[in-house]
Image 1 (spheres, rainbow, N blue to C red):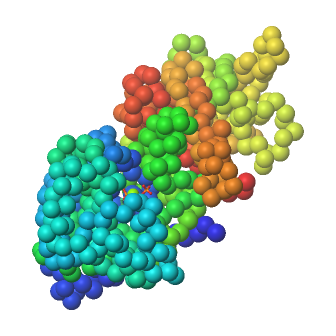
Image 2: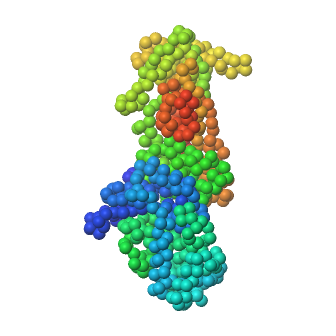
Image 3: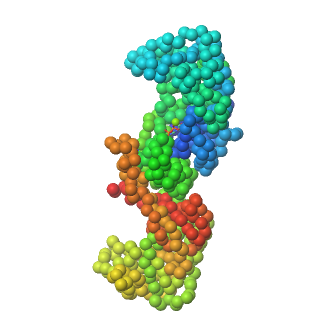
Length: 558
Ligand code: ATP
Ligand code: MG
């Protein structure tokens, strides 16, 4: 079951740090966010960023941004750049320069030699298949490798050969000598180095052996003086190994690892591998497609750093993995935009109305507040002309419709145009195909900013745009990318659960005041939802808006 908790969350990590600070155990809190640059960041990473950078901020400490680039194959500069941009956009600044695990490769190699000299590491020639047989399984102890008792000299010579490229990939590995019978599989002589004859995006061709994640991670933390190494739950069983390295190497610091539950969202996949598949198979238009749960996709969709952080605040930091209802995230952005987004009018499906008692060629400037409760957001001018556009759905010929159900314009009755006159629908004009082409209306004088006169009862308030001054706009309407609650847990491949109606593009007309707005400006289109000017495609006079979220949760009753 997905949870819909919204109160500020409990946070056991904060409690630990607070205690450490209180008891003077740590001079200064130092955390790190250590992404592997093999994809764009997603909402789960935003969670980890919020926690690591957030804790450092709260306790006047520092947080490092460190690329965990121990795996040369899948990593690319594009990912490094996007990750930096996303962290900054979220409003965080890492301490000093960006760090790379690969900066420490020399040190790791030194430490590997140290373990060999101490008799705690050896070069093993078992094949991958043999290794896994020797490893045993959870309930069956492993067996010692026949290479386990090589002499220090032999091991030193072999690692040097490995490093010099004298062995093929897979020919041998360097392993720690710990305990093949340990109930913790991670301690059964784990791999420290493997041979990979590929160039690395930071170190080029300097290395053909690369450290394992386990051998690198804790030592990176130690070198950087990390005090609290916060990671996700799957590393819990690795903690004894993390500590074994710190205890057996001459490291300058002893960081401590703490694990918290991964964040998952329903109707969403949060795995870089799967997100990459969506991009590679062109199911979406790139990593920053507004339907993607990536930080850059959410940004393009109109999510704000404030909303993402508010969302993280709502979700408890716990010791178990959780699936959060995506409506919690949607509510966070809706609340933020409701508070901050200026109001504007956009007619999605235009129907022309002609105000027969308003002179042709004349414009009356209506002035409306940009926000109902934030005068500081200023005012905007809405040109009122003889020809206007309203939404087709806001007009009906049938005057028997109940006033309660249809609070819009009905033939023979009145409605108020938002921020302007009350009008009455007098006559319908049809085209050759019988479709309503135009509605002739008349305005009730002196009703701008004034109550309706006696005997006139407008059914409601509708939005409108001047037909002459309104600006055509491309509107991209989005829905959830998947129509299955847990797309990657279903019976089919997750790709088969893609919602084929997750994107529709329509042309609409917006009020002129927003046609020239800056890219990434957000608005509430009155009675429609929240929209953002596209970061890339929107240009002055040629507006393109992406739908961020509707005014209400339309999935709640599905
Ligand atoms: P993915 O499975 O999507 O590739 P990952 O954990 O392999 O994720 P990393 O680049 O290694 O990705 O992660 C960087 C940091 O972000 C790690 O500390 C990781 O624990 C954290 N992180 C990744 N996904 C989540 C998530 N869903 N919830 C919380 N933290 C996460
Ligand atoms: Mg990973």
